[in-house]
Image (cartoon, rainbow, N blue to C red; front, side, top):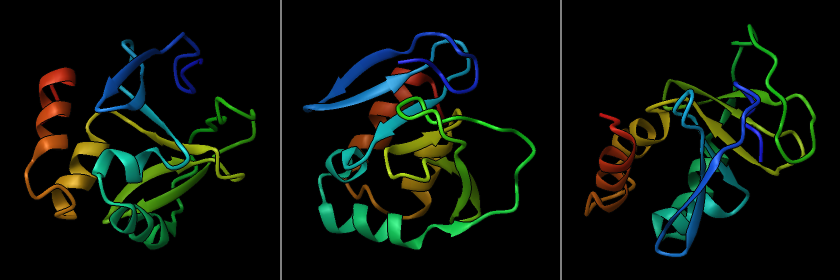
Length: 124
């Protein structure tokens, strides 16, 4: 899979059976549809987070979904703007955004995911 920002191949990493596509060039993370809930270990929390996404007005860049090639839509999660495939293929997180959303949304009470992200990607 190609990074939507750098157009370079991404690494596929795994955390407890969940694949995370990671760009070593820009530090971004792509999660396919459903992987956010799996990563959180809580389908309801993942669904609630996705349902809470609101359209954002940050359209300065034109990222394309690495699955279907359609232009992704900027959406806001807790004041953080992320990019979502209009066809529901997944979500793009720039460096640090996924950890910030999980941390600020109290979605990871045991800090399992946040610790993994910080250790693996030096996010903080």
